[in-house]
Amino acid sequence: MSQNGKRTWAEPFKIKMVELLKVTTPEERRKAMSDAGYNTFLLRSEDVYIDLLTDSGTNAMSDNQWAGMMLGDEAYAGSRNFYNLEANIRKFYGYRHIIPTHQGRGAEHLISKILIKPGDTVPGNMYFTTTRLHQELAGGSFVDVIIDEAHDSEFIHPFKGNVDLAKLAAVIERVGADKIPYISVAATVNMAGGQPISMENLRAVRTLCKTHGIRVILDATRAIENAYYIQLREPGYANVSIADILKEMCSYTDGATMSGKKDLMVNIGGFLALNEDDVYDEARNLVVVYEGLDTYGGLAGRDMEAMARGIEEAVQESHIRARIGQVDYVGEKLIALGIPIVQPIGGHAVFLDAAKFLPHLKQDQFPAQTLAAELYLESGIRSMERGIVSAGRNKLTGDHYYPKLELVRLTFPRRVYTQAHCDVLVEAVQETFERRAEIKGLKMVYEPKYLRFFQARFEPLG
Ligand SMILES: *Cc1c(COP(=O)(O)O)cnc(C)c1O
Image 1 (cartoon, rainbow, N blue to C red):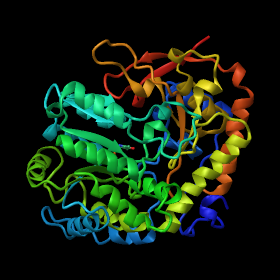
Image 2: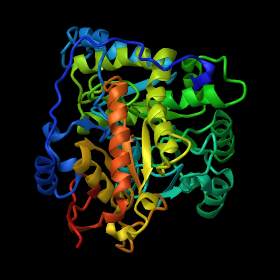
Image 3: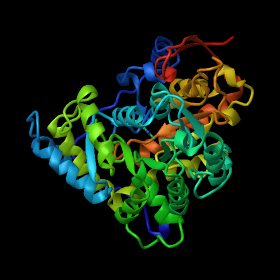
């Protein structure tokens, strides 16, 4: 009802095949959580009832995508499916050259290696874990240039993913344009709570960078969801199609890294898209070393076909409206219950504000990690931490990064769960909220060197 003044966000599909879920007892969940070191990434999926860990690769493919899987051309070189994928990326995203990769980080690895020299700076609208790590491994330093409002979980702003142009100009002034190979712009900023960037801001970033000869590289992972917010909120776009908005967004950038596991509803796959011939030539050469030949990039032909078909489905207005409508439905219910969440509600997830949910825990007692564990113990629902554990350590000082946001992400796979599942989720969060005062924190007892949130282990305090 709320969305666009249209009637409902009801799913534009019906269910043809189902996967049975296991309901566990509190006893079983206590054991599973303890075995998993209080890290939801270490749970076995069969011990999970509703899995909101991520929307990455967990989406339900359509019958059309599955049919495409049967048409996989598994030739080593020049697979028909590669050309289908290339054609659809050109058609819907508008880039000239494309290189498939096994997933998004494969593309991030290539672009970082090609464009970043040691000592370079890469500004971006808030970091993303794998993106920043590849920039750092290539010898670069990431600098956050997102608007300040993005760090305030309850500040209402239609485009909280926007780049702060003054911050960007200051970075260019400070380090010099020749030390900035590109600005990394994310569409619907994951770490800020799935917040979009406006077309106006993207255009302004483009203009500023152009005068300094700096490239703009888009993290297009959820650009289609971003396009939806532009249509919904930005003056002048209400009657422009999602497909046209997407293409306009891409037109202000020189290339994109893409995790097809999100917007494009495949279980695996990604790509690097580029406009510059010489950068493409180098990427085409490097992909052979790290992913596979440039006409498969670590993917089976069938996976490329599923992704090619996913692009067409992902830009359908009815799809995107239902997808974001479902997330909104949960978010609105939690707000009505007085539960602290990031606002505005993001595109792919509802983010619980763990700092406000568990105000008695200090940040180094891992409030978000704790809350994710407690929600699982309460209900068998799996979520994930986006706070101090995800932020990692400063490579120079060795201390934790202390991000302003301490969040638990309830991420919605596309086309997977029903409205009744959403209601169960809301009840479980409410029950956890009611006993929040009794919840104690965690201590970290094992810490991996890279991307520690995936494999770190914890023990309860007290
Ligand atoms: C998931 C994601 C990536 C990395 O993609 P993978 O397919 O997981 O390697 C990059 N950027 C954003 C915003 C993402 O959400």
